[in-house]
Image (cartoon, rainbow over the protein chains, first blue to last red):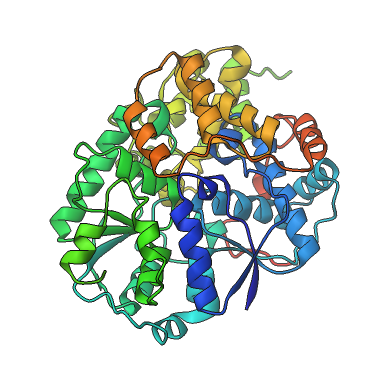
Length: 283
Length: 197
C-alpha cells in the first residue's frame, strides 16, 4: 500500500514525534509514505480568517503536486487535512472555484487524488484487523480517552468519515492495540486552537474543562490526532507535572507494534508520559 | 421604483461573501449551546447572526466574537438551517479588516505574521514567526519558559526550512485576491458528496 504524504509544518517542529511515529508505524505495517516534493504550508486558520482565496489556493498547490505523483494523499495533521479536504471539495464540486484555482496555481485539476486523514487511511484502507494482527506489546492496563477535536470531523458534509457527534474510529483503533478506551462526552469539543498563542487565558479555560472531564471519566491519558490539540493540552494546563499525558495515536501504534524508537518520541513530550507507561509495565 | 435599505444591503453583502442562508436563522440557539467561545466573547453566535439580519453593521463589525471564534465549526454542524456560522464569522472579519476595525488586534497581528512567514519561506518556522509576532504585539515575555523547554527538546529548530520553488508561491499569493472567491449558495452541497469533475 502506497500513499503520498503531506506532513505539514507542525510535524517538522513542535509535533516531530507525530511525524516520526507515523512514519515508523506505517513502515512496520508495510504502508509506504512518500513525502510530497516541495510542499507548501496549507495556510491554516490564518488563511481562511483573512484571505479566503488563499485558503483554497495554498492547499490547491499541494493537490497539484500530489496529482503529478498520482497516489492518494495522506495527512496526519487534522488542521492541514481539513484545509486540503475543503479545497478539494470546492474544486471538485464548483466549476467556478476550480477554474480560478487552475488559473492561480497553473495546473489542471483532475480529481484523481483522494485526500485522506492518516487515521482514515489506517482504519478504512489498511483496516483495524490488519493492525491488530501485528500487535506484539498489547497496551494492557492503559486507560485512555480518545480526543478527536474539531477539524478531523467537521464539517461532516465535507469530511465524510466518522460520526461527527460521537466518532468511534480512533476508539476502535486504540482498543485493537489492547488499551482500555473510556467513553466520554468531550470527543469533539474544541481545545481553543490557534487562540492558544494570542489569548492563552481563554484557551487555559477550554483545556481545563477537557482535562477535568478526562480525569472524571477515569482516564490516565488522552489520545489525539491533532498537533494543535496536543500542544494546547500540554502547554495550556495549569500544572505541568506528569499527570494525564497526551499521546498521538501513532505513538500508541508504535508502542503496541513493539517499535524500539518509541521512547525517543516520548522523551520529547512536555508532559512526560514515561512514568505512566512504566507504572503499567509498557516500557 | 425600488429602494434598498442600508440594513438589507449589509445582510446581502454578508450573505454573498459567506455563501450562507443567514435569513433562515430562527434563534434556536443550538449554535450558542455548543460554542466554547461564549464565555469569553461579547456576543453569542446566534446574536451575531441576528445583528446581521437586522443590519447592525457597526455593532457587529466591532464585536470580539468574530475574532475569538476558533473556527471549530460545531455551530454549523448542528444548525437546523445549515448555516455555517464559521463562514459568516470569516466574512465579517474580512469586512471589518476592509473598514480598518480590528477589535482583537493580537489575533489579526498573528494572522498577518503567520501568512507573512508562509510568503517568505513557503512553510511556517515557529521560532522566527513567534519572535515577529511578539515584537508586533508587544507580548514579549509570555511562554518564554515553555519555549525554552521545547527548544531543549529539539522541537524548535532555529533555521527555517525554505521551499525550492518560491517564485511560483509568490505568484500564488499575488493572484489570490481575497474578494475573488464567494462560494455561491447553490454550490454548497449539504447532501451526498458529488464525485468526479
